Length: 275
Image (cartoon, rainbow, N blue to C red):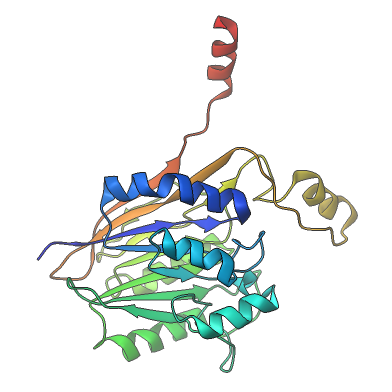
């Protein structure tokens, strides 16, 4: 049996991020031919949460499962939506009784895939332990899925790496999200788990992690809340393409995606000089 191929799209921010998915996802699907597409959508509703409107677009574009994070809760419409749509996840390790699902089992001819959304606790809301909750989930789902994919939405790189080491060989892949800054440490860990600390942001980079720069600067200068406004310029699509071994369920390959690449300043200056 062939490997299971998974395409993951990093944190989609607002309309600019959604438009990047709409415009360029088809070409990446053609290139990587994924069996499953997972999208982190916790910022897709103008930077805060996911509602039926945005999720329906992502599903129409081919998304199989949407993962979440701490901003999943920022709009009441998001909470209502994830309660009704099992494919739109919130982090599993929120306290019992929180709305929505933390995992989804996608049935596939190559073997069932468990997609699990998790959230860190360092510099984040104090919720249940992601390490223990991951153990619980794997024990619960071990007979229901062949492949296990975790979106670990966390601030601290140490916490992400620690969870990856903790679960190495037990899950197919752990992909970090939340910081909106893509890392270049994609690799397969010693026991076979695919890993990257952060898949990055799909959205506007002429910004402060997706937010209009002046509002973000004012938050730091004045230490007071500022209106969140999604930026619009210089959008990119980020993520990773992975393949999982049909026999072991572990990772065979992981490829980082950042499109289009940043244009280097000296390249711009050279182009300007020749115009």
